[in-house]
Image (cartoon, helix red, strand yellow):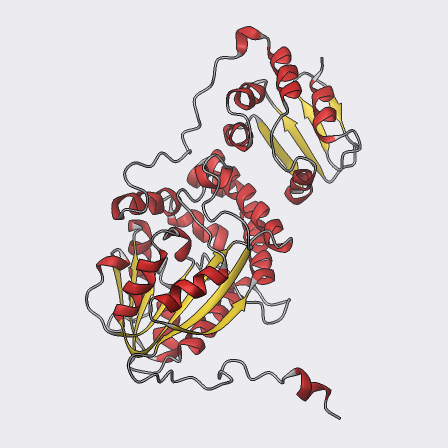
Length: 422
């Protein structure tokens, strides 16, 4: 049996992309926007040994599968194989293609995460963060562009550049937090320092950024020094659970909450509230899952093994309830789902435009991981399979005073009734 026969059985023969297999067989139109190259029978060895998404993920990372051309067109095949799993009869066919002598499992690619210790302990969280972020600052500069911001941007107008959209996101966070000169801001998971730099430069705050990534800390400190803001911004290699110099007037947490874990989320909100003074505000900006889905990423899936080990996405209603159970008053929730899809597509464009340099920085396997992860994530946000929300919460303390108007200052757009008035 030829490989093309197995492909047709899996995906149908009316394919939107072209397949080229190692045995010389092809399937799909010659002028397809993308070509999927199956380079080696090791693909089948991996899929037979690890049925489901993990086997395909390992084959892709190892280079047994290559995607040439439009990555989004290739990813549309996911709709035809939603479970990413071979049925028993298809596994039998794959085994016959290999031959019984060639069923010995292959080692997992070196890029696969192998974390140790108790889940979401301080030590294991630091290891997970290092796996994802300590791959070289230059690689992230290539992907993220000058903004060096690894979270959803806000495209106030569709034609805004990525750098402008990231600045708009930082400004939106600052306005929601009501930052004023002299206030103290804590940025949890500060990355390369872009949020604290913006807040200090444009709002005059005293800012502390904490990260678990040594490479992020090093570059963030360089950026603070270059901006002449050493007297206003401090970058620490520190777990937020170890911060002990509150109170702060405001806390921003942008793209960090996904690493906390559902079991630890109530303690996260309690700890953050303890760090805030009365009337202090928290802006929690995090990817979330639609209702009815599991919080924890599939432990055998591509993202959990190669991108965000131990990552968990919590439905926004649960996030709000946890925050309020910890003593916060939640005042505003905003979805930025479409903005993240546009952000991710911009990152994919940046990576593809700097492909050779990216490979030189981190190796072909890791560059391939990021391309697939970001493109797939963009499609998930567009299809509402993944969501993202900003949740603004206030530690009202004993007075009950929030410092917020009924209509927040950052949202003065006319109401529907006002627009339709004659």
